[in-house]
Image 1 (cartoon, helix red, strand yellow):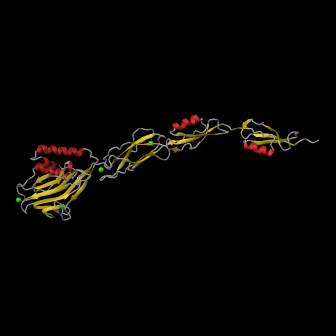
Image 2 (tube, helix red, strand yellow):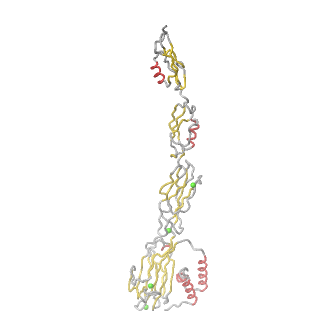
Image 3 (cartoon, helix red, strand yellow):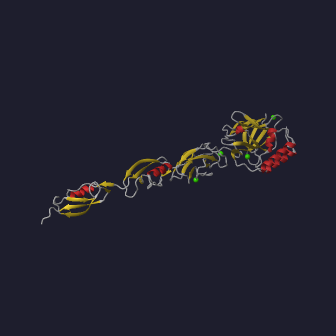
Length: 435
Ligand SMILES: [Ca+2]
Ligand SMILES: [Ca+2]
Ligand SMILES: [Ca+2]
Ligand SMILES: [Ca+2]
């Protein structure tokens, strides 16, 4: 039996050819799902297809997974049965095509891993088949063969079909051409077999994860983080989007970026921020947002020198730090109970909770003047030095009671409380005045 395309069918076929591959063939749909053909239905499909052409293109990647135009002159890579060869008789537009002679088949495994929306396109015709004998075009989903077309059409037609979803991302996918003609003078011819697919998968891992959680670096205003590097089977490069979810002061989202790391700056010290990361591939397949990862900026050491102890401790706690060891010392310049010094330098960044040691002023050191009367001048001097005092003006006088060289008197007198390093004047005896 010979099948002849109607005038309408030829017209649509021409439209499809002129669309030069951009048009997803409506003929495939007709042959797959509609028989016998209805002119009204075909017009509807044609209008539908033209409308689809006017819609913005989806930002997905349609790439060739595999193709064979048989120009190698053999069927390498194919599994065959019966008389299946590459021959010049079977070519459509160029030199070689695939030929099935009598009862035969040729099948080809083509992994569709990472692809969806699997299209199968091929040129075919039959020659001299009898009624009930056909070329069958089928695809394998891993467990069953699925028919795309059963035909004995003697005209070269370029067919295109979209496989069902179980063809997607399928490492067991196969395409098969099979004939059940009973004589060696009966043929099917094939050329330009092309399998394409679309990338609809986001990068992996999905959801994205952080490889290093937000960590304070370079002072107390910055948190740095990095995402686990993503990969995408078909559409690199992977891009990353870091988002801060608490709306914390100074926090910013990263925007989409090819770098897998992010540094958010301008943050407050000792403040917790939470970030998520998300990945997308080069054609806009966007993955799931990660869980939130929190990080806390470091605390900024306040300057508390000169403050009262109470105010200093309040400031330290407010900065996210703790008060460490508090010791005391005398100071000639810092008032009693005010901070003389702190062990951490003001303005530096340290982990929250770090302790700050303080030295609190006892005020000016007072000492008690020792009794040096009756001592030699030398011993009086060392005694005063030991008492954090020094010898002041030394005068001499005759004395009937104090031996020569010993201190007669001192000023200030013993037991007086004075500021440290005060000078003590002494009067040294010259002995009894001789006349
Ligand atoms: Ca060819
Ligand atoms: Ca036959
Ligand atoms: Ca992808
Ligand atoms: Ca910021």
